[in-house]
Image 1 (tube, rainbow over the protein chains, first blue to last red):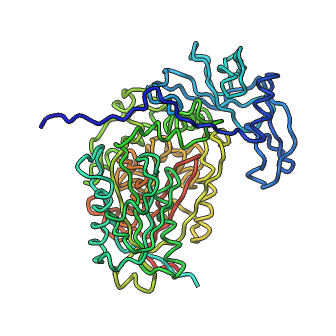
Image 2: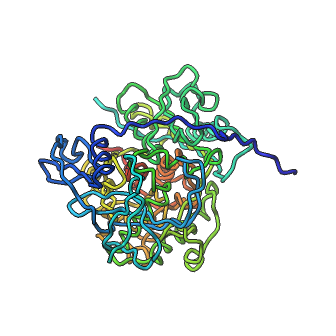
Image 3: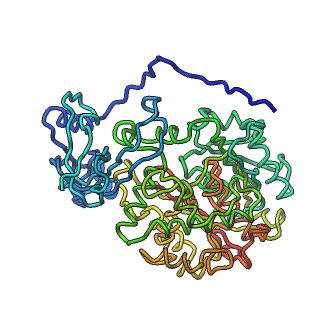
Length: 154
Length: 385
């Protein structure tokens, strides 16, 4: 049997027009990140849990959260992995460069985890509980990419 | 007054990595015809249909209508349910509610996926929040790796403990002609396979598959006329708890703990380890086979590795897990949870052939997916009170 050719549909240089709103809480978070390099979280008035990313309602208590506070910028690695297989990034359509560190950062003062890159320059230092700090982008635009990555500082 | 509900027939495809010989509707039809044959029913006997898949895999968003040539749903009430990885268990729970309501006596439930038709990891990534989750998230494997890493750090488990679970499931798959991957592997082969995302090796994780599954549920008014020994549904529970991936307590599956506690209470189960006879767990990677049975209360926190090394979850052990080979052997994602349900039903009905566990009174099946969600069903031989 001869090998059949697949029909490949590509969008070429065409841009996919996704334009996501970040919402009321996201707007405050990203404005503070861009202008002041500060990480803003919200606290549940009932269970006192500190949420980052910030959002309007504590899912455990079903109460509205209005108390903003600054967390970090330093923290520890809550958990992590190092991605070693190449795969398509649906945001760009390109292969994501591997290896890369995928960190769940527990900011000082926060209770939930914040996802971002961890530098894998020295893999031996990447451990749960290791202290980290963010490296900010020089040109900040008010997005998650205003942080380039987190690095281990121990 | 709610009706008791039983499974009276099941059917599934012979799952493969690629089924270019059939389209989606034809794939669905294979499972539907087998379920109808198993229950000795005709399509005209079916009162309503529940169907589900993870629709961004195939890019077809009106699956309920599109699928009718395969599902047989023409001029019947049909609804699509889709909840990510938990879809296959969600459609079963949805069917249970439809029959339990008393409005439909016989409901056909379908889960399916043709994962070969798109990029699985890319599609999974688009299930998550575009602002907060997608920058670093890399499909299912990345999140599972972060869970395994946290469990290892918290309880001192090892990569060998995970590999032992994979060896078990891949061995069990040898007994299941429907499984996609039917090849025994050794502990050393798992540990020597390529590292995908620390600490997960290639042989620790599931494949992606093309496959479909169908289950027929019937109300207590007709169930025993269709099938003398049906599989009675004793209860269901679902927990879809989190908004963002960073909200989870990594190293523990909170949705499994909370859901199973609810299920044991509903069914009067006091000691799940002693009272359950078999488990079909939606366990897409080896470490889930350690962590999640602790959250079910089968053993205590950190005790799963010892329990599994001692052979308790192997065929012939105290509480066999995944006699079918489980998700590590076969994963057509939207069908996967329903395959667990069908396999558990077959165990209760005594129809599991080469993978039958003797004398099953209670069986447990689950679905896993989304943002650390778990859905579950308790199956029993006796009619619930």
